[in-house]
Image (cartoon, rainbow, N blue to C red; front, side, top):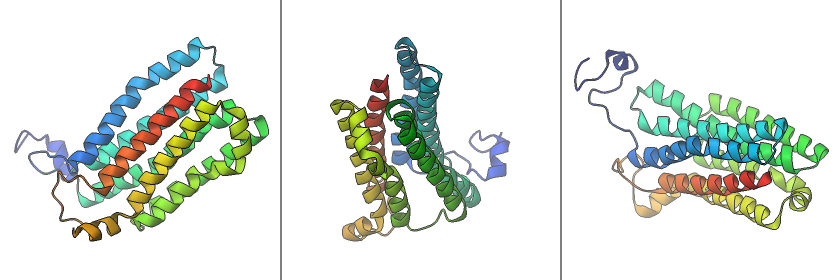
Length: 240
């Protein structure tokens, strides 16, 4: 131990003495999402099991809940730990990769439980193929402009338009609206994320100069992501 009681192992990853959170507000928002995802996983699975869900249905719901845990866990870690520049970049890659996992994970129950076999199968294959390609893209260009990331995420999220008729026919009106509201929330968040430079310019803020407890575009983006996830949780819960 040294400094403020910092374990020596942290020296190896260059965590400053006297641990602090890199982006407190961003970390807090998605830490709440992470804790909620862990808490809600047994709620979802207990409900599904009690409703007589079969193996495929349980697996699909597990994938969705795990994707929630992975996204919010990765985001919380990225915004929390003050690692070296290389360490932060690795966490950023993980954070961005998990966005693709959450999107694909959110499609999985809808495709496997609600949609007709052929439609669900091709849409699920398309979405997970998109996710794999997106993750590879992020591994090589995690520093791409935010608007590029936003376009990719939003495009992937709305691949469902190619199966919209089947989705509408397969879901109750209430569940379709929850699905739609979730998609809109994610889209609004994605637009805000992609326009952060514009928002900073409008507010006269130099990126990187804002205080650590700043609540701005990125934090608002986090809130909309959580709203989108909450809406889609309701959809998945009601599929069984």
